[in-house]
Amino acid sequence: MMKIEQIYTGCLAQGAYYIESNGEAAIIDPLREVQPYIDRAEKDGAKIKYIFETHFHADFVSGHLTLAEKTGAPIVYGPKANPTFETIIAEDGQEFKLGDLTFVVLHTPGHTMESTTFLLKDAQGKDHAIFTGDTLFLGDVGRPDLAQKAADMTQEQLAGLLYESLRSKIMPLADDVIVYPAHGAGSACGKNMMTETVDTLGNQKNMNYALRSDMTKEEFIKEVTDGLLPPPAYFPLNVKMNKEGYDSIDNVLDLGMRALDPVAFELEAEATEALVLDVRDQLEFAQAHIPRSINIGLDGSFAPWVGALVADVSTPILLVVDEDRVEEAVTRLARVGFDKTLGYLKGGISKWQKAGKEIDRVESVDIDEFTKRFKEANARLKIFDVRKKSEYLSEHIIGAENTPLDFLNDHLAEFPQDETFYLHCEGGYRSMIAASILKSRGYHNIVDVDGGFKHIKECSAVPVSDYVCPSTL
Image: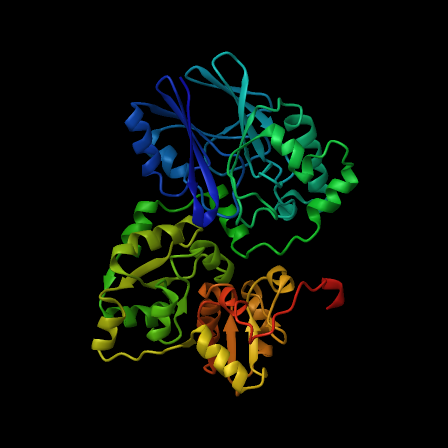
């Protein structure tokens, strides 16, 4: 009997795995909060025997240390791993028994030097599945630029290693072997991942550009390294935590879930110089918020955007959040290494206002009002599009400037101080983040376009361009 469950977390586009056989369980690449894995094993009456880590993750803090502490199960890395804590550093080809199953270690360096694929064989010894970490995604492979400094190698050299790993360890496997990757579409660990999260190796051989049988190493290196955007600033900090250790999630939650009344909240903010992070819906934030607070809504790619825009994971944070979502917010911050949440505003903004505290607002207009103003200004509104460059190039308002949210700090000089300007993204989530950051920097002449470009392009009164080749810009 064999059970394999993919435990997928959409906001991180991350897949952890629970495998059970004959009363023994293994967890692969667990998230920070580990109780769900413990509960899952208890439901089966199983004992967690191994915690397998495919590599030192950059985009999230793994739960390997806490899970090992709570279960006594050893942590297993592949060759070249050098953590500061006790672990099993497996050899290439080493086997680990799990009930009637067998895991085989396949060292597959390239994404990182310690990157390892775990091959699962069934009770009959037949190759059944591979847990590829960031070595092989569906439709893509792991980016080779994240471990350059640690490996003292160029991204081209790492890409060359990845080419050899794929062709010597993974492509020779049978087409019916199932591929279970660590990430799916939306992760910054790759470029062009599929929305599906499970596939057969045979299908990947047919459609994944990186697995073309006639591809030379030089072609592979060029394609894998082409178009890589700079990684988020928090990535190396998460690697450090995964490699050297971190505080218990229980302690992080105890601190982060402190309820602070408006006076205590304000005093804490002043004493610690904490970032006030408002995680409510963008329209609620627009109507009333604490001055200089930053809005990154929970109902979006919350943790990756916090990681991308708040460079230092040691930044102290105070939350403005609905009280029934406090634990969720603190947990999701901890997943990407932000462990210094100091509490939340008890009673929310309404309690803040009743206490006579100052509030701020963002002017937000719907598409009808935006269209009206666009016509009245004879199409001469100052408009900033905060979507990714690739989205902007695909189609955009003629005359709009592209200031991607990821790199907003690089564009601050482009925003006027004395002229009203309009911000939009695709649906409204990112533009309000941008508006909050700009307001915290002293820009108060902002109008946010609610609904974003998906509504703008439906309006014939606002001219939209077709695809623009980057070479013509």
